Length: 263
Ligand SMILES: NS(=O)(=O)c1c(F)c(F)c(S(=O)(=O)CCO)c(N[C@H]2CCc3ccccc32)c1F
Ligand SMILES: [Zn+2]
Image (cartoon, rainbow, N blue to C red; front, side, top):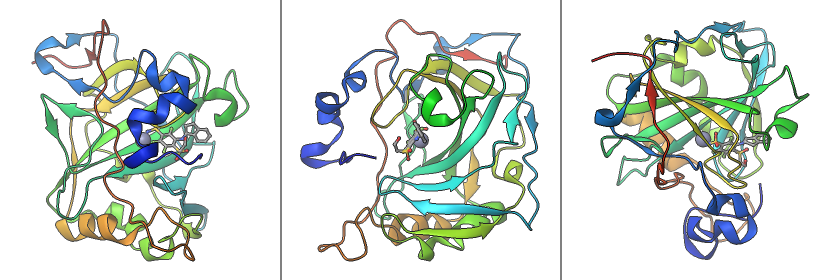
């Protein structure tokens, strides 16, 4: 991406100067206020196809200076949305080792340690994620809240390679695995709203699905993520650690957040 950052002179309060949508409507993330949720019985359990990738496939794990990204094959898709939404990539947002709160979405003001986003694009209407990114029906992102707790062996498929992508534009090839194992057990309980990319260009093009159940990773796994990664290139001086790569909460305005569950 461009030269935007999360703090300083190119931080989020300056994004809208170069990326006008960042100052617009339908922005993400937001605080999910559970008292204001509207139950929608048409919100069915999320159905995922071809998420169980085999170990002899390879995926690219990379550092783009803003996040840690895992490329995903387009054969993975969500099958019960208004269009087929095919997977493009997943990436993470996290806090810092001193402040282990770094989720983008919050629930009743509670910020979680981290958040994972699985980015999909409308492959019925567009050839790739870049062409879909600025279209109102272009993207569907699955959000997973991450808290500190039990060791997460599924996450270790990614975290064990973290020292190979320390610097901006580092990339490694990793063995694929069952991406479903990164998601919570309950795919039937989620929040749904219309929002945006949480990074520039902030296009209001995202159908957000945020699962109610957080997943857990261990403190050691979190610390590895929070301390291993730099936003700067390997040869850059001084090195710029990457942490707290989350956008602050945006106003919900007149949007109503739907939920797939009662109680
Ligand atoms: N939190 S989020 O889900 O809104 C989100 C990000 F947080 C994020 F960092 C990225 S990015 O590609 O790493 C950085 C510039 O878009 C994307 N990238 C997506 C969106 C647009 C686009 C276009 C081509 C390839 C990937 C992406 C993203 F969708
Ligand atoms: Zn994201």
